[in-house]
Length: 321
Image (cartoon, rainbow, N blue to C red):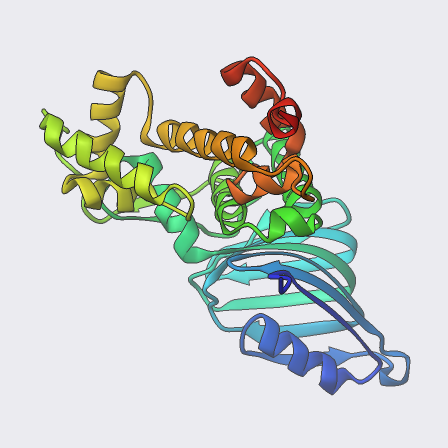
């Protein structure tokens, strides 16, 4: 199976090669370099899959660059050197250890001096989808500007999510090979960004009170989830299948099922993993981790705990039976 994770390493002592790499990887920009070009060094290590990426950059010179807006949400941590960014009246100056989110909508003026950066990217579309679901709107944009975390606790939460995605998803070929896990990882990073950094939710179409939802619509949603649980699903897609709004569907699940659409989806996926474990040939090379990844569970230990709670035995017991 082809590895869906792109691992890119770029090292050069040629400033023009570094400039072209940054332009192709991030966005159009017009740089000015200051210092000794003969001592220039650039090093980049990128790990990307789908809408997400965890990346590191090192640039040895002092740079001033004007960058165009991009279509990703970038969270940057300065690991060494200094970084200044400004867009309009918003400006931030960061040193080692500082963390901030970039403005994805405005042209940006960037200045850095001998920096080492850790960068996390999330697709803007994925962030907007999660923002809409959290806001209970038909469509919404999480309007970010340059900002630091809301608190040290939120910063630590963000970093724990990044470690999980980097190690347990992008660093695990089985997990990274699961479209369900990659989809959940993108949603997890988007949710963490929305929880960690201040933003305005620019709502485009706020829904009315959810009101009453016909049982047939709820059954349509459940049938759609049952039939499509093996692929990535969004709340908006589930609601469209039920011919209702995301907010109304959430209200109906809470009222009639005592749960949420996404929790119901996780239960269906756990049932799918249970069936696969039952059907597996004990003499084959099937593993609990492979089955868990196929159904969107990135951490085998957490999957085993949920499985044991639901079925009273470990998944490895089911596989061997």
